[in-house]
Length: 257
Image 1 (tube, rainbow, N blue to C red):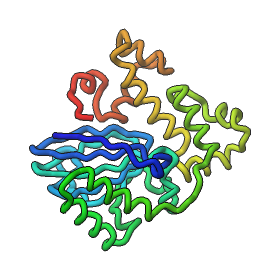
Image 2: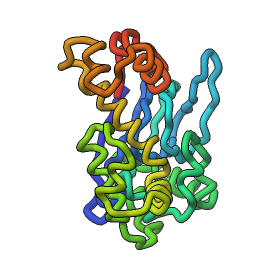
Image 3: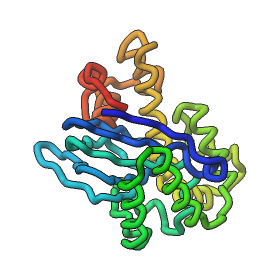
């Protein structure tokens, strides 16, 4: 599998983190962990499936994925090519007016947001392009046409920065006090901007931080304790729900990205 990452143009950088072009020359399965960003996937060759146990569900050629609470196994058939758009945590409202929290834990066809003809035209452009650079050009032209001009919520951006700084280990009530905002108003704005509750969002950051710390940690017990777990079974339960594997199995398994 070949994975190539591209940086968005200057006008789109406040809203989009990166583009990833995936080219799978053989059959391969990747474990995708929950992240704090929405993603849009447009397949222009081959087939992509989401596996659940021994069964697989073939995904639509163009899908939009909300934030997830558990890992997913994504299977690429031989000869598959797709482009993945990774949005910034606060960037999506600049393109869509739909309540984003309704998409938590879901992946839906892109036709729920754009017309079938728009999607078909873009897929055709991606398929016919002779280079990945040209594919990015077509994609950015499409995205620029969809910008609504809605400004980024600075209060929510500040909250996200604070959650990252604490690696997800922060009480939401303490965060609200720091921001001088009511709990109800904050949670509504947070869900509207990020597509998740503050607690869900913090948990994703926390678990990804746990995984990132593993190589420098003396052991799993220390790793759990350093991240606020005083019960090993509670840590293992949360970890398995997030990754789909026990800590031991997960850290022994290869990962693509």
